[in-house]
Length: 549
Image (cartoon, rainbow, N blue to C red; front, side, top):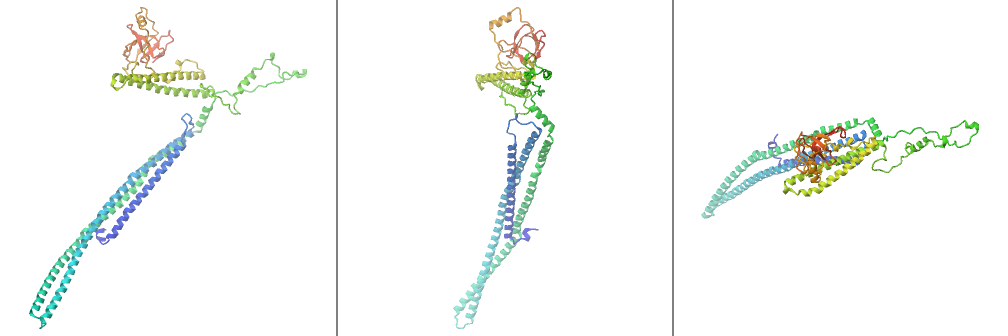
């Protein structure tokens, strides 16, 4: 079926049909736009719903029950589901709606071009017809004039009263009219032949080609609609696997609800650590009443010496702990958390220690970064002033000292709760564990090191004369242990000692908390080295055999 041959005379109807096709395509594009707006609104409402029901409390206050955790997991999965609805809206807007609108503009331009070509062809054929019609009318008019001239000539030629000049004049007029009629005839024949040729070309070449182009355009529009219908469905199909995972995550969260675990969490959260109260003893208030001889053998004997019963005092001491049938008194919040039951106090103290250790680690990382920057400035002065970083370094070290003090204080309270009264060395925090530094690190004085506990302090600076006398003394200090160098140290500062990796030395003075240990080499040379750079083993007769890195 071809529009060019079967619909050669339906130009106006094809004009209307192609316009309807473009209008229908734009109507479908509008439908897609409204659909993606619904998806966007749906996703937005889902995200708002998730945000509304997400816990607004801090992580410490969030319940740890499996039912709550599962609900939060469902909220996370629902949030991911909302994200997939947004993906659907975005894909529809880009691959369907946007594509349809661009294609609609192209169709309008193409249709306009084809219709203009058809109108031009029709106008040219109309012009040819007018030329032919004018030549035909002229030929007809010239023929009538020639007939009139012939009738005039014949009348004068048969009239005996007509003069010879009148007859000759009528005869010449007849010849002129006949010649003009012949020329009009030839012109008419030529115009007619030209019109027939152009008409054949119009209805057999130009119009079929134009209508074929319109047919191709309309068929491409139909194909494009089919493709966008498929794309509309494919957008949904592509997100189905992810949506299925979201739904599977919700099902998994539902399976993770454990009633026994929740019950155990309730016990762990509210267990006080107190022992249940014992039995109440009988309190005899009739001891001071005089009895008859027969009555004296009945009843509870008096306490000797009129001393109070110690059980009564025990009862008095336990009364304040009985909150089983009444409202628990609200105790003031104390820094050492002694107002809490033992078990709750232990948990809170441990939690506080962990948080302080994290803050200490952050301060140590900041200190290391500042020292590294200072080292770069010292090597490249054009990049910055090293002295400008010193106040910040000092402030960071001060913060570290405060945090260490807080950690020590809380560890003491924790040891008290747990019944352990050991020193801090017996309960070292995770922040006090030395981390291995890379080989070739420089002294902590104004330099960078990866050791997490080595503060950037200078080694102890004794009086120069005392230091010299101490090293020149014929009777050196006794060794309290030995050590092995874990890393090389350049000993560029005054009072420090150059050591090499794996070098074994004597320990003559332990670290006093400033991060430096005094050692003596095999050759007798003494000085200070960073404690974190050596592995120390103390002698048994010197504070026990202790090894630490």
